[in-house]
Length: 415
Length: 72
Image (cartoon, rainbow over all chains, first blue to last red; front, side):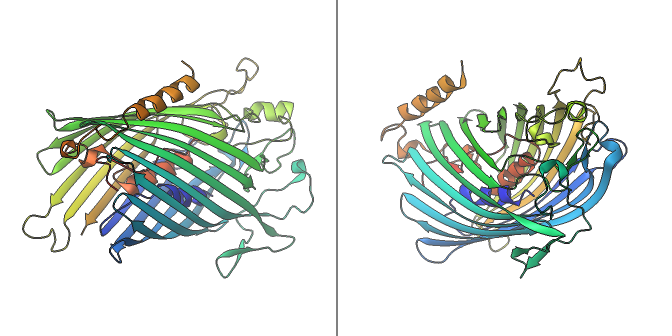
């Protein structure tokens, strides 16, 4: 269900490599699950290749996958733990990009395709950047569009409160593997159109300081509910129902300061986010990079994040006892009020070619290992005094301090 | 300080550094270092954003890569 983001990210943020490169990495994400339901595990291998095919042209190709397994809550209710079911899925995506590089400018055009059992994504995007005179200011503009399809139970003309959720046993047929194929009476495919754009200014402030400001916006139009999720409303458990339209925007500022005496650098970032579902959020990130000798780089970072709830989100107890908030109802934790923190460290081993290439091929080779821990705190969306059940069991997540861990191994070579 | 004032302040600071003489080419040794390049590891950035998008409703728009020496 999240291929749209991964592919659009590639479309709008592909950096401009001016030389041949290869990168391979694997990330393992492990999230706790409450009620002895095991954890959610995602293994995310990725590989990218880029090669010059002329003086000004670069060809890029990428592949990544998500092997997902774990337990999920199919019904949003006071006790989500008891309604957990196990599942596994494989998401795959591929991208192709063509880049054009001038002395001060670059243009990268990217196309992508992603597939999983219940989701298909076709995307195109482009990033253009130019260094202004003096080469202290870089302006980049990016745009991406995605034609996505989401598999769902065929509910015909049923009203929202009468709709049934998709179940894993129902087939999601594909035509040629690239397009959804309806099976009337059983499953259908909904369209989801996504447009996003971003403008970025990167500015050198001094010989040791630079700053980046990015303005981003996205418009989604189409089916955005989780087709599997049900919400307990009164005595019924209809499929989750959220609006078809959503417009989102954010502004981000990031700052780097090199410390020559320490041979390190400090990093700071802040972001503000708002959307038409009234989710308002932001994060602040601090980082520090330190070279140890010439071939070892250590990076530490800390991030704090908080968001408000969508305007139609209610704690599960109130959906059960008071019905919906207008037309819509959801059990998506991403639409609930939540705060989280991240602490991470990364170690990079850097080998730069001397008289001979590294491993007989690379001008520069980097091996890195990274670990992050994530801490999560749920916040009540509605009055806690009127909610005798509390919010502890309405999501299927761990209620300890440590919510998830991320480990990543990566190899990046330039040749 | 509300967010509108904060965002305007950032833009003003950014634009105030523009110009040919902000940093000379001979002074970009540190700016060219990989730790000064935003999103210098594309896989790490993409994977991090992928995780956050699956956990946070306010994900998206963390910025583009580049920066550092200002040399496309």
